[in-house]
Length: 358
Ligand code: FA5
Image (cartoon, rainbow, N blue to C red; front, side, top):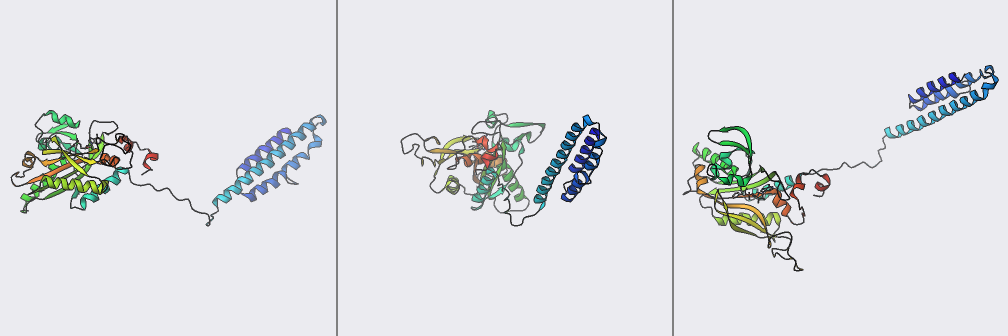
């Protein structure tokens, strides 16, 4: 009898767990626990059980009844919950999906592009995997000159091209100057006789073996190149000032300092006045400003295109002149007032908590 009770319990439980339909659960309750149910039928055989075993069989019968009732109850509330979940309540307020946004660097690139397009520059893109000739030789770097090391270049293990040299990841967007001038000269000799005029904005990924708080191995530069017949340093200073005021705000000013690059003559470093100390270098309480060096923040390089570079691209330096500049996107972004990004590598750490702030 005890075994029959346990078998009855097992079959009841397995049928109960198989359904979450309220009507079917009620049918199972009647089938097992009803007045004429299987448990009652089984207990009708109790008188045939030896007298001394009856208390134990009675205890097991009660336990089986209890277990089946509990299982029916639990499965019943699970069924109710399921029903609630599948019922659509059209009055319930919706859950607003969280919205992402473009990456900080993409935002900066879009803004920089718009600023330069407003004064007639055209955005171009050139290869990230480049030949030495475009990145160095045509930019007036003598063969095997150690200046190539200044750019901490990643060289690619590829058969060198007899004319263009080794393959590399471009360490600066200045290679775009060469591609732009070469293609302007090519299209001119193919029938277009008007004098060459270039107003290029090349924004691209660039690569160097560097990683610290102000350097990442992959970063972006934006390069301007203006070529025409009477281009002077005044044009360069004008564009620099226009960019500084448009991107950083009307209170900021710019300056150029002498510097050296192989591909520009004269060459400059360009600076923007510090927004934290207002270009003074000191805070109102007399303490030195921690953001800048004596009131100025460095933007990047610039200069008048070197005659040898013009010649390498097929342009006559007696007829044409031009200026170029190359600044870091991540650098200008972190230099903006209120950004407070003290480690540039954070931009590429893919930390959503950091990125969501902007
Ligand atoms: C150059 O790359 C020159 N090609 C710039 C130039 C263009 C000069 C046209 C004259 C005419 P420089 O190595 O200083 O110069 O880099 C320019 C800017 O790129 C730096 O001021 C900095 O803002 C940014 N930069 C350079 N290396 C890194 C790096 N590893 N991570 C982030 N930004 C960098």
